[in-house]
Length: 234
Ligand SMILES: [Zn+2]
Ligand SMILES: [Zn+2]
Image 1 (cartoon, rainbow, N blue to C red):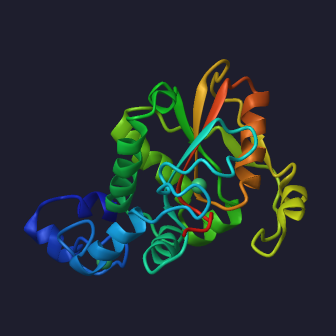
Image 2 (cartoon, helix red, strand yellow):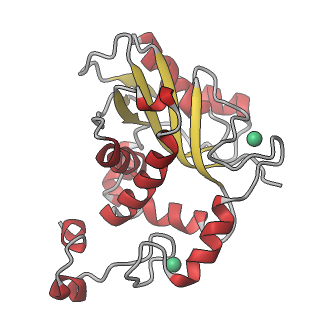
């Protein structure tokens, strides 16, 4: 409700719920405040250490079962971790719109993405959704949905918990995540191209697992989108 009100241009509502910068959370009339604007441009144009491309064009380490990917940023630097931290703790339509708009602009140049039928997301652990009241990947899917006019649908559910992935290597991550998710079986995805949203692509284990489930359910092609990827930049 607060976010709906925040979108209003009403002076009174702006006083009650001042619009804030999507990155630092400081009060700002613009989506990116003056202080963050410079860092934002540097983050957006940072290049991959392997292929030399910007994050949005880098196709290194494509997760297994995924045909293509778009990540907006490389993880790290002064802007992206605070953005992710905030996205995991509160929902903001303004943030969703900003990130969704950036993804959509990059999607437009890629026919595979424009032809996709539906947007879904890697669901957050239900315990964390209860604790924080937010699922950051669902919010990412919602933002992209509003720009692209493609439906955002929950196609995957968590069927069991899993320990933290952070400290594990790739093999251990795969074992930790196996069997964690299942298809909701609520939507006919047979032969369809699906956009799969996650907030950060690390080793791609989670996205690969989800892609496999969707392909097993009949999806023809899985395309990943994320706010950031952990590929090292130059
Ligand atoms: Zn800022
Ligand atoms: Zn690369």
